[in-house]
Amino acid sequence: MDTRDNIIKQLRGVAFGKLTSETSADEFFQNETLRPILKLQNDLLLLVFQNYITKSKTDFNNYSAEKKLNFIENAIQKDIKFRNSLKGMVIGLFTLEEYNRYIVNSSSLNKRMMNLIIERLKSQVQLLVHL
Image 1: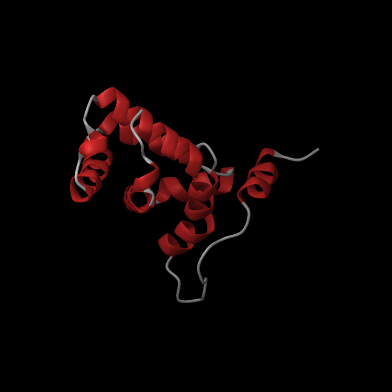
Image 2 (image 1 turned 135 degrees about the vertical axis):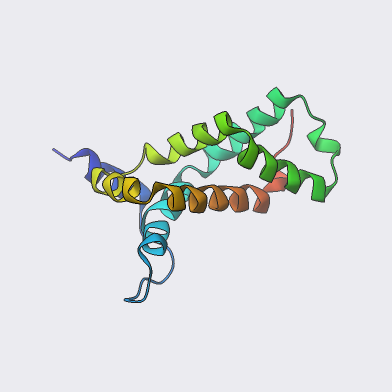
């Protein structure tokens, strides 16, 4: 029977980016763990953000492109409850070993995680249609 960690790694697929001997521990974690999880969770992240737009009762569809990008960034950086929800969506797909590595340097890794999510949403802003 497969263990939870094996199942998670199979779901996520391969790492992103080049991993060399000069790769920092945080960069290694980002490419080995965070990027594959965010790719796997992409559709859910989009749906969660669409729901956030709806609940915020903003006129997102009529925002300029620049204002949409600012809205994404501000939502993730300033709404702590929403930020923690996004973090949970990612952390829930860590293996036990990855979680142990994460808690050693969670502050730096959280910053990387949120920046990756912000950039992922910004690059797909055209898909964020407020219904």
